[in-house]
Image (cartoon, rainbow, N blue to C red; front, side, top):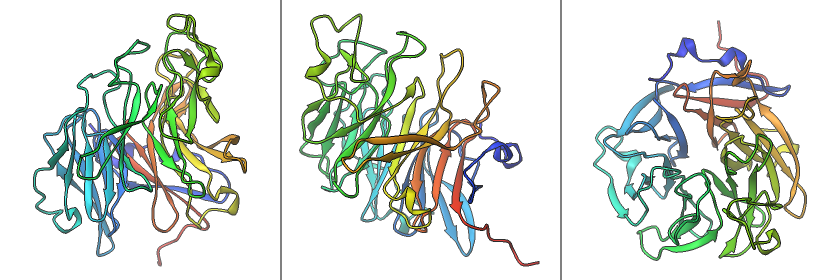
Length: 354
């Protein structure tokens, strides 16, 4: 059940000086990945419930609608030219002209049904690249396993569901990616394996420079650790190393390049990453939004905390999942623990007239 507005941990959340954080919308059980419509509608997927939500702004008021229900793990959402794409566990569907029919939407139309049905790492993120193709990850079907040719990858598909191909290999569990606005190269988060130790491997931030690159899993993690169970006879030199590390067991999920103009110039083209937080670490880590600043060559310069406070006394009061820019340059952050979306802005907050 989503938390009521008065139970949200807003007072505990911290942002750098000059920034503000507020509740954008609440009441959406298990709010996960987000997508922005042309008319300002924010679409929100879920993983543990069967619903896709629409946050609607109309006549100065904001409301939440259930856009679709009866779906199975509809975690991923993407929007392009009036069409909403929804990624469930084993299929991708769409709703055309969705913002024109929010009050009476039809059942989504399936366009691709060739995704595995494994529950382990089975929920899907989805996004549309600069080539106007759908990208969808297929994680390993377990913590650390020798998988078949249908797992441990990122696929790309035409918008009508045709032409599926493998784009990246050696991917354990990616739940977020975006494209560098300057180079058009894909960057993606990837969660490292569990039960190796509390300090390694770290989650990865990877960069795809050409189709077909292999990022190592399940043989090599964080670019320099050969897996002690499955890596015999392998070398990390044979795989593409990450451009940055995101901390051990931080569950780095949704990420977006900051292409807006509201934030200070130092944030331009930086990457915001939602870190859901560790589940099996003695001292939990993550549970925040980090900002990753890049060097000119596209490698990671720094990883800094940005939105913190979801982790209090080693217990979660919220768990960020995805980040997304609004047209005004502010940043939305989803929280599946509370079923809410927060908005981070920069500058003096607007105060209503008395």
